[in-house]
Length: 91
Image 1: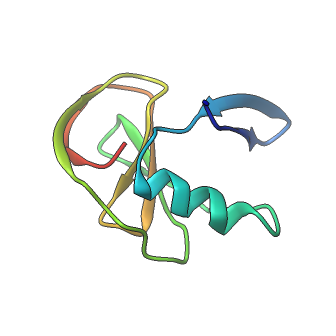
Image 2: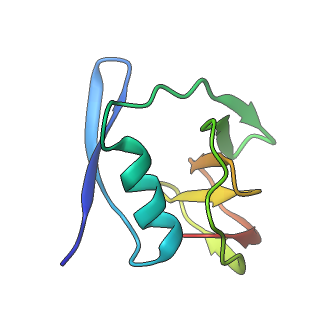
């Protein structure tokens, strides 16, 4: 069964589908009690990055991202893409 979450950015919101892996399950558990606010910074002109305040399990694999992808980086940062990149991330 697909697990989804609501992502709010300013006054806009959208639904994101979580991957079926241990990192996504741990992230969902982290969000269980209360919403998470992440301050994000622009990086390299193709992504926004922000710390989530917790280290999650990771299964990094070389991945080419597309605009709209959300991934885990360095076990404790969420990355939202508005451009493409190839690097090792956990979906």
